[in-house]
Length: 114
Image (cartoon, rainbow, N blue to C red):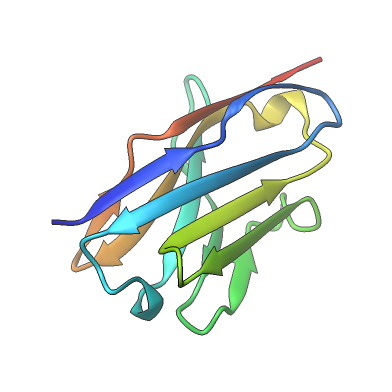
């Protein structure tokens, strides 16, 4: 049974930083590509970043340079380091893994105050 558990969200001021974590179970983590998405109020869920099993990273063009995705295979965890946060980064952040179907965590709320 695939399970993804996000943590690390919270309230931060504009310009601040947060690091999100997503602990995965039920999969051979090191063999899987992992991704982060986010969904702001009233908007569709959007892709943020992806990291492959070989640690190749890809980012949404609008976020490149501020966000960094990484993984620790020993801890079965993927991270999202977010710097220079802006109010428009306010959203629920989800991690995801695709194994035939997409699996999602419950999300973690990030709120950036102006």
